Each structure stands twice: as structure tokens, then as C-alpha cells.
Image 1 (cartoon, rainbow, N blue to C red):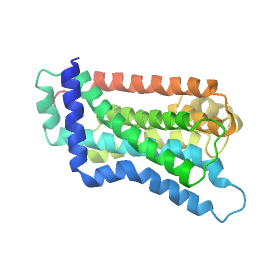
Image 2 (cartoon, one colour):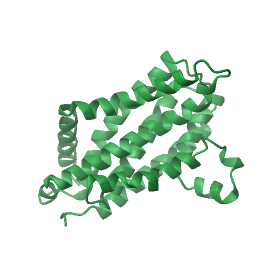
Image 3 (cartoon, rainbow, N blue to C red):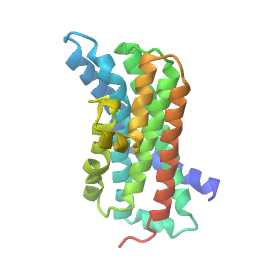
Amino acid sequence: MSPRITLAVAGRVLTQVRRDHRTLAMLLLLPCLLMTLLWWMFSELPGDRFAMLGPGLLAIFPFVIMFLVTSVTTLRERGSGTLERLLSMPMGKLDFLVGYGLAFGLIAAVQSVLAVALCVGVLDLQLAGSVWLLTLVAVADAVLGMALGLFVSAFADTEFQAVQFMPALVVPQILLCGLFVSRSQMPDVLEAISNVLPLSYATDAMDHLTRSTSAGEVWADLAVVLGFTLAALALGAATLRRRTE
């Protein structure tokens, strides 16, 4: 793996995204728009329901958006033949994936900072923990979505097939992450499945920050999310095909 080649791949991806204004707007603004819509839905109802659901969805929206955009972008590279041409050069698969990870990780950081600033500064989402730690969890969650998007792109031949991974890989995590039913109140089998899904730990960290000032549990959840992210990148590098069938 060469740092020079990795940074060149990251710069190329950032240039492409900057020129694609619709994708850039979707990446940076869509989580803010969805959180605003959620706040508006609950604004005239009794009780602070936005405070109950907001942190969990602040973890889910960037995760889903980064998963979709990353997997489709990678498949677009494969479909156009660009990926095959890049990998025919003296460039390792890890160079390609880490370069993509750096570029989309930077975008995920900007996306998460905007969404957290909106929720805490404008929509008055109440926190017991620190804002910067909430931002860090949001960034880690978006990067996890990116890593899983890169991983599944190795198993799809078209953008449509990549989108089909949504109901198989993403929706179960949303249902079992504890947003709708507390994980401890689920049937034992579902709780056990929830325990091996990374989005559960991101949601737990968000929820903990709304209730407590202690950071130990949050760091533990972050470590799990980071571990899943690195595993997804490693599996993506191992399964990425140099040639398109």
C-alpha cells in the first residue's frame, strides 16, 4: 500500500463528488432535512418525542445515506470500466479502498458536523453528554455505512443490485438497533442478533449521551463500531475484483 497512491485516489474521488452537485447536496444536506422533518412532525405533540427518537435517527440517517452513495458510486466506477483500468495500474486493492474511505470519511465528517449542529443548536436536542462526543459517534456511524457500502459493492454487478442490499443488510439493523423497542425487551433470539449488528452500538452510544455525562460506555460502543468498520474495509479489499465479468 502506497500513501501517495492512496491520497491520489482520495483526491480524485473528492473532485468527482465536488463536480456532482446533486450527490454533494444529498450527502451534506439530506440528513439535516430529514432531522428537520422529524422535529416538525413531533413539534405540536405532547411530550418531547424528538428527544426520544432524534439521537437514534441521527445515527441511522448518515449511515444509510453513506451506504447507498458509496455502494452506487463504486458500482458506477465498475460499470464505466474506470475501476478495472485503475486496478490494472500498479495500485493495490487496499490503496483503492482506503483512498475511497478517506474521501468519503471526510465527507461523512462534514455531513455529521452539520447534522449535529442543526439538531443541538437549532432544533434544541437536549444532551447530558458532550456535543463533540455526539459528533464523533455520528462521524463513526457514517464511516461505518461507507465501509459496508464498499464491501457490498464487491458482490454486485449493477447499481440496482447494490441497492438490493438495503433490505437485506441495512433494514434489519434499523429494526433491531433499539430505536423502536429497547434491545433488553426483545425476545432473546432477536436481542442476540442485535448484539452482533454494528448499528446497535452506534444507537446505544447516541442514547447514552442523551441520558448520562459519563463517557466510558460511549467509548466502548465506539470501539465496536470502529472494529466493524475496519473489518468491512479488510473484507472489501479481499473480495474486490480486479476484472469486471
